[in-house]
Image 1 (cartoon, helix red, strand yellow):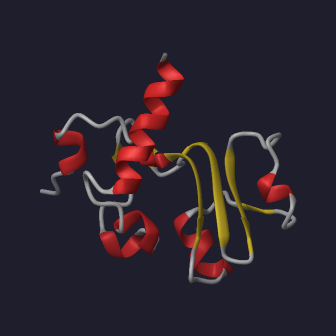
Image 2 (tube, one colour):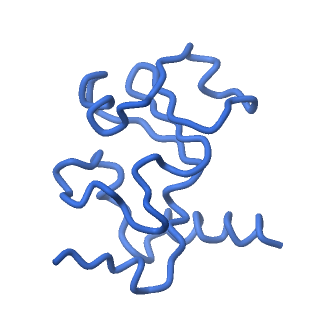
Length: 109
């Protein structure tokens, strides 16, 4: 059985909310990981007025709100090979992890 170390550590999946990343994969692979992703214009992907969802353009992916592959605090894509590489590169306690958790703590206050 798969055990999520982040969940065991008490994380609320901070790194799976409101994220922006660049993938070295084509549109087909992006849509495999995020079937509901909408292609948008280059500048629109940076807009503050995007509704919750997943947007992509030229290998850039922006998730507004929670990742659609998130079930409470666990990823629905149980096999690392099904996840985008950037999702697998987050290690518990890495700089990106800590900054994501700090960002969420500020939202709560």
